[in-house]
Image (cartoon, rainbow, N blue to C red; front, side, top):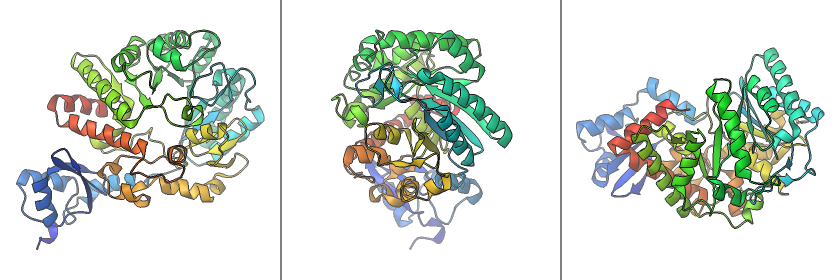
Length: 463
């Protein structure tokens, strides 16, 4: 019989290559051989170094360092929650692009958020109680309703000064309508900019149709304007997102090189998700196709790191912050608890993906409107269910047994769009396969000394 101090903490495990991946309720992970797992599970004697490593990670129920481990456990259970931090405001449904996989309308017929609705939206945002707020302007194309953007920035700063909240602004834009005057205003108000950059012109323009000509040329022109101010210290460096489609699969290196060519060291690679027109565009990639693409892109970035080139991938950083540092990334925004999204008409959703689904005619995830109180929306049947979805290890049978659930998050909107149900089926869920595949790839790389040094550098050096 095992000594009391040698009893294992409750853990999940899965076969991984020739070994076993383990994780526990503290979101700590380790890898053991099959023989080591057998001895550990029985409470048998283990080599001192192995025992010490397991003890430090909280795998023995009688040897827990509560002072060190409890903060991590509380963070995993979101005990530090103080209200939704990220608020994504679609100030218009209008856009000058007609991207093949987007739900926004091209032309002048899309609806704009009015100043009256903008005021109600801000009052709602500041009523949620979060001490730190990020207001992100989206569309459509937010530059096409710039007057309301300016109004919201000015009013939000006034409300934050009165209420004592910290405040940051960001904007997601295709940059085609960016002028020197608009950029000067955004820089003066410290608005971080993010755009789409799917790769070189041939890839980018294949999915992003622009009435003014080449979408890539317009984006590159805007990127250059932003990066010039960033180099002068007047604005944060621009962020960009690559939506991975069928057009991308053969070009991972060219896509990374395009980011670097534009002065962007944070590469963000995400597969096209089946929301809005994307579900019908025929451009989506399978999880296996994405993972093969991603592995090649990651390997290329690590090779560049070895040559002294600063570049990293945001999705990998999200995992590494937890795998290596044990912290919850600030950008892993859980539906309703940490983020909310708002339509031009003041409709409220738990995420921007839910808002995009509604833009395509499916309002399943509409929580209510800015006329309601946050308490009412959070306590509604949909609100309570969204909160439950933030804890997959407590609500998903597959996740309850999966060691990857230590750093994974379930997306109800993806489940609904791809599988026809809020909870989905994790056994066949494409997003689940992508998350497991990326985390397995990173775990394998962390076992390589040279790669581990670079990946640990990502986790420690980037946000």
